[in-house]
Image 1 (cartoon, helix red, strand yellow):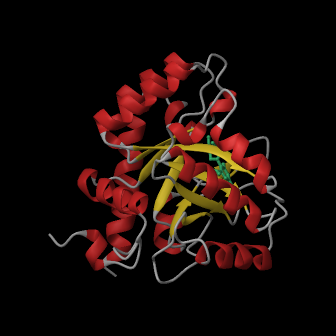
Image 2 (cartoon, rainbow, N blue to C red):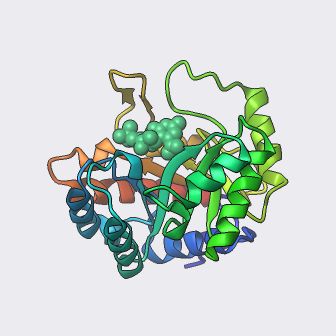
Length: 262
Ligand code: 6AU
């Protein structure tokens, strides 16, 4: 069969950044556009989840600052699991400060994010300084790291409007050496070169008690043009996370191949 990357504008092969290329290669090799949000508080629980679902995912997303017992060993163990199971590591720190501060947040502190993460994200609100600071931190790390700008959010009543999203798109286009796409609820760039990862996904639409809003994989990929789905509680909160991950992988992949053959 013709690889999805060749046939479709969803995540076009033109994506030039090495991390985008790796991400698309993993997606096609594993037939998975599933990113799992491993929002668990205990490092051992995250590692257990990794081993269960590693073969089914293309990205594992963590919030290192919510892990009670995070140490440098947690980062090494995650890195080893990512390399063994062939998935990328995404630290969802949502940087949102002046350039000088984000350099320290990305490279220092307890978490030393750019020493192990393949993907990071940031809000565009501070202006281009946030991107310049993250570029400096990534360059100093000597590792290839891809940035996703949070151009839209899934939460009810969030303050992002279409003008802000447009400006995030412009920021990303000016920073193609670092920025590989967006956290967003729909495709923003129709060249397909800037990828879209969409959170707020479950197999049934709905929400939680604190404003999270869920759409289905078919909706976010098939109707809105996302490339990747980000699923947290739908998987780690399931009785059988492995079976749930299989269901999301199948639904995400079916939606992508369906959309790209249209
Ligand atoms: O599936 P859930 O609701 O359990 O988890 C969704 C995950 C969480 C959020 O911190 C994150 O996705 N997220 C983000 C990201 C990835 O940046 C943005 C957003 O708008 N909504 C959202 O839920 O780890």
